[in-house]
Amino acid sequence: MGTKIPISIAGNLVADPELSVGESGVAHAKLRVAVNQRIQGADGTWQDGEPVFHNVSAFRALAENSASSLRKGDPVTVAGELEFRSYEKDGERREARRIVADTIGPDLRFGTAVYQRMSHGTVAAPDAEVRAGVEAPVAAEAASPAYNVSSKSPVVVPPFAAAAGSEMSF
Image 1 (cartoon, helix red, strand yellow):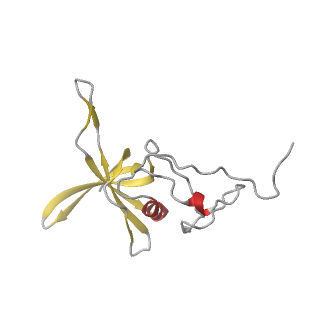
Image 2 (tube, rainbow, N blue to C red):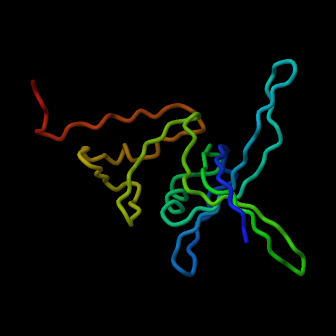
Image 3 (cartoon, rainbow, N blue to C red):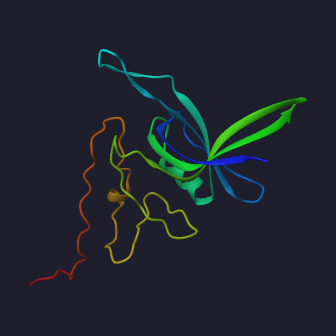
């Protein structure tokens, strides 16, 4: 029997997410996240501590969206349950831990992101038009990735424009 503990981490992806589909048809993404502790020395300078590596599992739509949105090196936040398991391999008892993610997202301390809502049950192509509520259609250029970690500079996305002929005047 496993023990589950609520947990939240912020770190960087060590590799691209690995997406697979199980025999039951459920999508599963495996992620590896490195978390570095910052330590301030007696002289006031900051240094990186030893990294702690976490195995993260995501399922269903979260797995598919993570695999299509995140890449190696991206800063991420993960919330879920820390799961401890014990098993036997080659006659030897072993233990493993992983985080089963409830949510995964880019860490916005280091860049910007544009949220693209997906319709229930489908994952749209990156260049597909998206409609969300009363908002105007999002153009393909706004749907392009706006999360640029390498330059750490924001990507300017124009605000939603009013649909032609629906301008309001007072």
